[in-house]
Image (cartoon, rainbow, N blue to C red; front, top):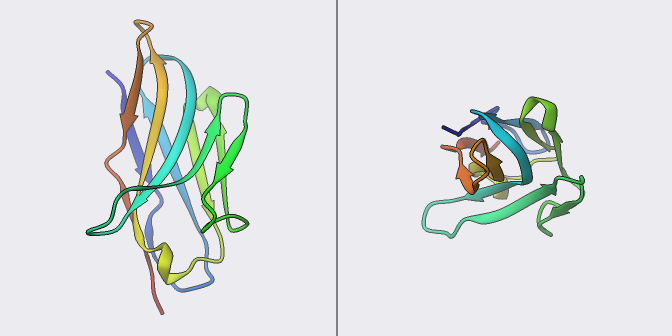
Length: 120
């Protein structure tokens, strides 16, 4: 059974940094793509950043130049380095992975989310 767990959220002041971690538990064959989303109350979930198996990254315009996505496939882990945080970055951040499990089935998995709060 595949499970995704995020960590690293917290409360910081504007301009500070946080590093979110995403760990994928269970037996998997490969990770096709890992994504970070965020959501605030009453709003739709927004894709913040993604990284493919080959390492190609994409970012939302709102975080470009401030956030960096990375991964360690040998550890089934992904990260989101968030610098120069703004109050507008306050949200619950979710890790999402498109992966192949031990049965060869491609699936889309989500973590439970981690809260990021940016305020002075």
